[in-house]
Image (tube, rainbow, N blue to C red):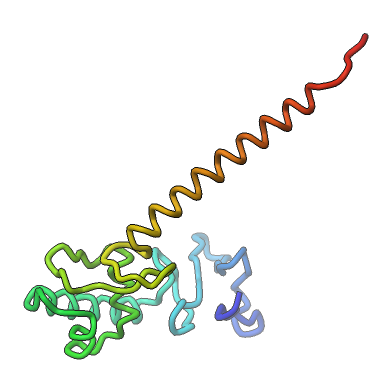
Amino acid sequence: MAGKKFVDSAVFPLVARIGREYTSYGGGMDVPIANCKRCGRIFNKVRRDLCPACVEEEETAFLCVRDYLRQNKNATIGDVVENTGVPSEKIVQMIQDGRLLLRDNPNLVYPCERCGEMTQTGRLCAKCTQEMAKELGESTKNMRRNAEEKKDAEKKGFYSR
């Protein structure tokens, strides 16, 4: 749990540790309290793992990138970084999260997490996606075959009353 800060019970006596989040108690309704994933501030967790300030900052960066891409359809990630100031990692994360759709931006590509080949969708290129699907299918077949062999081995033997 590196990066996760915990609330000091001496400083916040009405906060109890429940799982990975903290919930205040005593006044009726429980409010989930968490540390921001990015800045570490304590905040009331409603939907996301980010505090309101970081959500606002992320949304501003998204709008800036989106508007730039609408005006510059042939931009590369380098162009977007240079002209918006948003780091390339953040841009790639927006694409992978499905916030940025690249159908109108053919030059906006980033490396596959597995092989490094350039892609425009998801975390993996089409080749790696197919390879992983094939490997998963083979693995599933092997697991089923092993389970059947185990059942057959258990059935062998002598039965008497």
